[in-house]
Image (cartoon, rainbow, N blue to C red; front, side, top):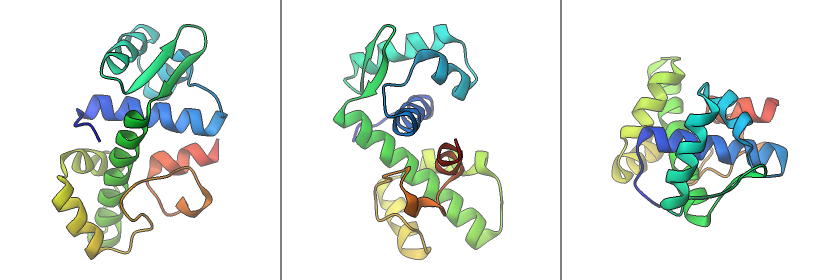
Length: 146
């Protein structure tokens, strides 16, 4: 998995969720809508992701994650799920944005320790959006609802 910023993680997760829910590459407009950013911002980030070998982008067809991009997206999503389940289940804090921020900050070691502590459906990698993730993070639940 590649180390990524919160912004890159958001894009990778969104590309993954859009691609999984549609069964095809994620189009620029879909990503812009889902991320609430401009199409130009999406195109710029797709160039960055392609340069880092995290995604491939073909104009008019869309973006697809590379193997490293998908692994990274799944780990980012898994950490968000861990944080959300911990905050909600253990601390009774229902704040998905706080969970995303917390998930972005988790080291692999801390994530593993939280996983040992909570009752969480994932074992270390998010493979959303599959049916067993009805207890997973808001990002996954929202994608399944579409």
